[in-house]
Amino acid sequence: MIIARALTKQAATGSLIGLALGDALGFPTEFNDVPSILAKCGPWREMALPEPAFVTDDTQMTLAFARGIRTAMDRGVLGPLRLERPVRDEFVRWYHSPDNNRAPGATCLTACRLLDSDRPWQRASRIDSKGCGANMRVAPIGLVPGLSDEQRGGAAQLQAALTHGHPTALAASDLTARAVYLLAHGGEPQGLVGQLRSYAYENREHYYHRWLGDLWSLSGDPTPETFIARGWDECLEALERLQEALRTPSPETDPCLATGDGWIAEEALATGLLCFLLFPQDPLTALRRAACTRGDSDSLACLTGAFAGAHLGAGAWPQEWAERIEYHGELMALGALWDS
Image (cartoon, rainbow, N blue to C red; front, side, top):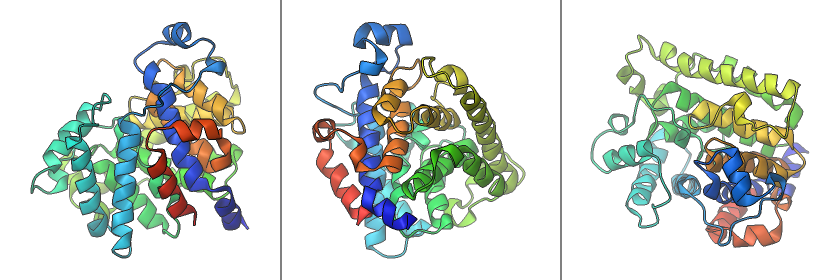
């Protein structure tokens, strides 16, 4: 019943369109504080989709990851060797694209330049970076049907590690994909934080050797288990702050004050979830709340849109907004692939 409902609501289409809409809504407000955003855009609950509705590197890299997944799965069962090459190639293609002009993050640029070589990907990864570039783009792996938990979690961590090798970047990406997956398959918003905390505890010392290889050895940690546990522990702390914020919700207050500005992966997860969970049945208000923050507004709204769209499906978004979003055709095609 849950699977049938997920297919009917077109969760993949809803999530992909939602993340792009959030990205476009937050693009003009990134690097602004809330008073500046209100002066520029008017009341936050009335924020309009920009015209034209351009997206940032968040959506561009999401599409790169999605194309890599599609190529890998066209070749057979999803695994680390089959996934790494096409995703790596897509990231390098994005790096060289003339459309890569949307204020991309320094970590992604540096790592993708290094990936454009014969070196093992672990030697390109920025082992000390846990920027939100790791999980702003991970939603597609939570939308692909028929994967095991090991495939989904391993792929989420691998795509993060291609650029951001810090254990918190890996754990936050895994949790982000898990949240998208749960919502797409009928999970209820009110139980989501508890489910994510349980998942984090269960995986706290689980290092995906098959997917990550010797990445951990570059960190200075004594064992792979201590390496990955550092990341899960920081994510658990962020989820605790999220849970506390939801006990006394304050929709008119900048969510970044409760769960962080979102420049780093665990804060992007927590604040994106907070914006969604403040308005689980009102997706446009959730997007607007995320876009009107002092933090990394495009990435926060991008994640908020991914969660809201996975939960509510394609019908969450006004057709007039969806049709205007940049890359609309490709987003719809990927959604149709994974909704079928």
